[in-house]
Image (cartoon, rainbow, N blue to C red; front, side, top):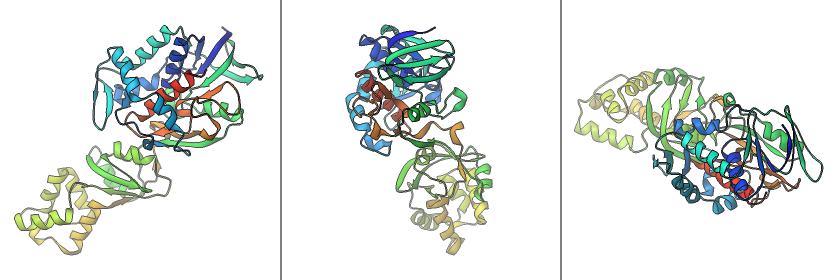
Length: 394
């Protein structure tokens, strides 16, 4: 199969499908090409299968980029309220989980089906199982060669995402296209990803596997307060995923395991009020029984009554709880990363249309661009906003 169309979009994920729907409804002839067997695979697995499709509190400060101003234009012109209106129009029930995070009440497939319906209304032609062999540009139009023929169009949109979660078919294909057309690509790395621990803390993490605590974690001047989960391989949970985007190899994490408590003050008060209560009981009341047992064992602190507990050991325990320093060996990598940091240099794109400043008719949207959001619906909103920006121009 081959032919000529107005717009070719490579990538049938969130950004690609939304851009296709909007452009199609503008009267453009749109063909979407993707090598996967089904569209929107990452949509379906996102948010634990319920798709955290946006956030009430979208702000440019919640995005990482070498140019922190780039995302402002698209985000301000297609907002979370615009997408919420679309979701509501389709009768999709949703709820706020916490901190403005919006999830489907039912399944993530509600969002995917909405996008496919919107594409159908725009007359979009979606071609799955289509392996792309070559892309070229003759100055007037693009030619995309697939194993089933050649497509030609005056506009080409790259919406291929990044290499995170390769089991779903993710790859760095979009970066290759960008480089082919002489765009700079900032080296990608895994973001929103769990940490691996290999030093003396590994045994402790393994022993506490499955234990979750609300913490505050800091690294390189950024701080996040959310849940942390101990795993057999290291540390995970929302707090760790958030800070992972700011962590670099060799950095330490500063973790406050009891952020809502002044541990020294609390210990002194409890020593006076409940002198016969044992340390392990006191610590378990603020954390979990398992944590208290393993933490004291790791510090080689005997389970004494509070009245007998003080001096250097008390100071060591307090410091360990309020400023636990961990030096991860690395992260779980793209295998479990929710996003890839880095991507196409935004200085070479129009912030208004997402168009290449080097090649007329070439556009980059979504995760392939050097814009990465925090956990909590921010990356989906970037997909919708950047797609809308391009759809107005193509």
